Length: 497
Image (tube, rainbow, N blue to C red; front, side, top):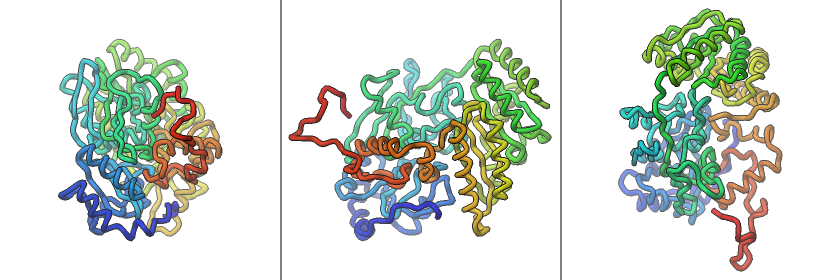
């Protein structure tokens, strides 16, 4: 593994059996896994290039058990790595050799659905798709839809602020989460937000969403559910090359059209997806846009016409509008299967995640082609094109010495490119370990220290998910931790967490 992780604490490793006994007293039965062969399924997450068996795994079933586990680990100075379904593509749930892996897979109940207030209250182990399935009988759905929605859980979505193909119009996870129950590292249980639209005081819910398991463990989530739109139609628009497709994307948004989703695939991704799912994608184009509009039927008809006009103005060579719901879903099935489909044409790949201004899409695509030639590695591109979120898939073979190193360097150059054109390091996959050492490309030392002060406010002992996000993690005392003199806090008039 080329990415360095914290050196395991020898004292923690030496008391492994005592840790297991203590946690079995909290989570009895089969709640603790410590046999070496049984830990293998937990050694990696979706970023499978990196593997590390955990110290042990604990699988609580209640918030009280989560609280007790964290409280005990806090008292003993034992690190904890929270984990949902393990679909993270940034190494956010990568275990540590001296850390307890806290799995939330048993938290899989939909607790309440309130159609009048349009909210659902669910446990973190409920899959993204299962929320929609729980409410679709009444004509509702949950809007954020990552491609892994059949497997990824809402707790992991909250940790990474996940997106999806329909987030262009309806927002990311942070725009669709109204409340959360969170257990802090010392075992304290707190509630942030609720069923209402917004909360007074500090936006602590906004801090927790996207915090990658560094601040607390989410044990309950209140999400916004939406009524299904009256009509939804998708159109496939093919272009000779990716640059023309990128120009079309920029013009669609510039003309004030906000589709429900606007995705893009280049030739390698198109061919891989079509071979995998056989949905009828055109194979004679260099790039393909999938654009969906929703709302009243008349509005959809008008927008489809406008998108066709803009496509033609940018050199579109093919256009096909979905004929009914089955075909619309087929269009999206190919896009959502793009990542596994690419796995059929390459032994291994790294899925990158960066975001750029839409107007720079043609420039960035051109430069990525040059980088592909320089590194001698193929790349298949899948984009949330409407919001500038890129997912280049760098193809390599881990069995060839040096290819993983080349793929990592190629990926780092792509992310630096994103930042250099005014973009950011990530759009929805998080930082984890994958982008950790690139954080200084985007943030100054002062910026990073300020972010770490937030970490210290929630987890002063730095026990939750260490080794992630921050390239250099300072001790809280080094960051000027707040001094409390005789129990008197400075500025007592300010609301505090």
